[in-house]
Image (cartoon, rainbow, N blue to C red; front, side):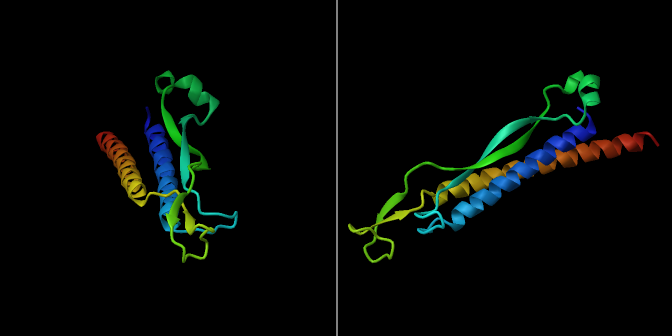
Length: 145
């Protein structure tokens, strides 16, 4: 794997984890939202990742067979979780039904915080990989002097 491939793979990881953290932040911010524009409570959202082959040009594909399995990551879509809303008994809430239950978002804040920590660690790992590649490239340039 060459320097630019490693940087592209790490950059794709940084981009994907940034989108993941933004989605998690949105879920946490809307954990108590009972009314949305679509009607009903907020629905948790999850990013769907897919592997993305690291190729920039046809020449790259022909020239470098060693990198044929190098893959980055791409956020394919942001999907809504299909779990039903939580039903909470609160008859004084303006959105309560006739029995006094309110449909609350299907967001578990503790689970979202654990996901946020995981996304942060993945982001940090990609930064570390980029810094290592950069340091190796700088050392290679110093050798050439």
